[in-house]
Amino acid sequence: MARRFRSRSTPAENLRIVLRAIPWRFLLALAFLILTAIPAYSLGVRLGAHVVPNVTNFFVNLGAPPPSATPTPLPPFTTALPQPGSLLYTVQQGDNCDEILVFQMHMADAGQIFSDIKPNTVKALGKAVGVNCHKLQPGMVLALSPQYPLVALGGVILKVEATSPQQVLPTPLVPVPQQPMLGIDCSDGCRLTVRIAPEVEVQLLVQTTIPVHVGSWVWAQAMYARQSVPGFSNYPYADPSASLNGMVLHACDLHIDNTHDNNSLSCDQLQPNTIDDDGGAWLLGVTGPGALDHWRYPLHFHPGTRVLIWLTADNNGNLKFQRGNPVYRYDENTGLYVRA
Image (cartoon, rainbow, N blue to C red; front, side, top):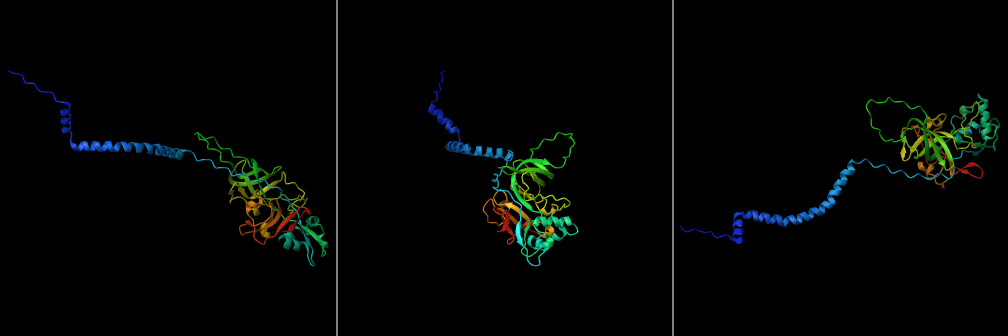
């Protein structure tokens, strides 16, 4: 029997066979994918170079600790220091010392503080005003001083000391992670060493819920130290010759950096004073961004001007400057306060 031989298929025939076996829809889809894949890949590479790093940074920043606050730049120190002093008044017909103090110095309790029942108080008043109050004559000139004066201060905190013993807490049984120190707690009272001028430091007694940091700037109104007179514990006048350097002052109306402590002592809570009875208080200060300008009183003086102003107390004991309140400027030549 003769053998039959099958001829081999050519490559072209094999390709046709394969193409016939593949559905034409698949071929169209494959061609479409090839045509779109290359541009999509190029676009994805470009987007990935920008989107992925941004998304990564977003989640990194989200989980990172909050950035520390930028410290407030410290104001410059004042070029002068607050100065207690007197202003002059010429006695008029029918005047007496009590009436002069009431109407000229807003001292409502003058008759109680300087009383004939305590001759030493009347004697101290005569020494302060420069004449015997029992022998007043029209034309006499009296030196009148502000009673229980306040002082406006600004300066940098150098040291913080607690004025009451710190409570000892028991050691916890479970370890507690230590939190970063946010400041010193002065809610029970602290003594702050504050530099108010390059060579002048005061001791400021404060009670505040604001955490206190060394290096912060503090603004405060404080009770100026009064002159010590034997047998006259509530003597109302400051000693003009006393040095402010090293003086211990009780603070009120406290600001630390840019934060005002609304819960700190009001100035009428500092004793002794006559703020509530007088309806206000006298304030010594020096104009400038590091001190008196912080309170934004409507005063128009060159920086470094020493002033004495009257602040009016509202129903809550808060002191405010009102237009028309007495304003005096310290005269360096005479050493007296003159009406501005």
